[in-house]
Image 1 (spheres, helix red, strand yellow):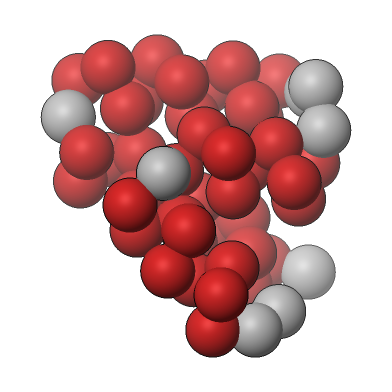
Image 2: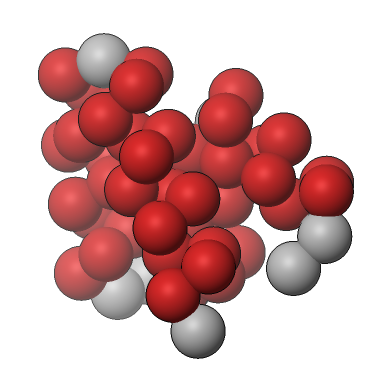
Length: 52
């Protein structure tokens, strides 16, 4: 994980989630969260990055 991934997770959460987990359930959850607003999608993407 580097600073570029974190910046991507803040501004484009689905792309950051895709780069981390691919086309899995977490990617689609992140898309749904991002539709509700940028903040929930960003939190989920950052969580994905620091989880492993």
